Length: 99
Image (cartoon, rainbow, N blue to C red; front, side, top):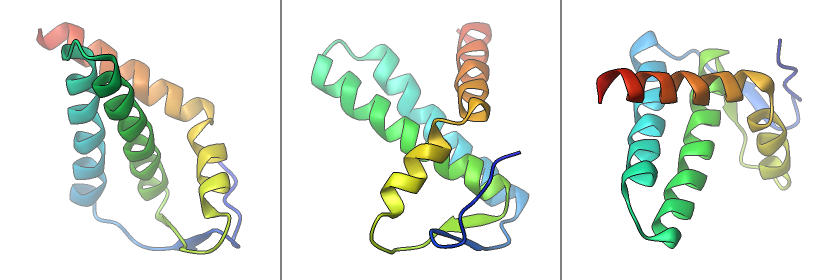
């Protein structure tokens, strides 16, 4: 289970559709990063996918990031959680299976 610091995260009820949309947005950026040949594009889209994947994970737990100083640090700590790595691995498995 992920621990969310109340200083940086607030409760927010997301619908399943919203969570799925967040996840799909992350997957879209992963696909772009994977398919493009330009290193800067790969980096930018990989970074964006990490952020969007973190947002998808956080929304799955019905949490939303507060706009307060330092929230990005707490967000990155959540993005480093093993569950995010599992999401990334699942994205890769799905990509391989579909293509």
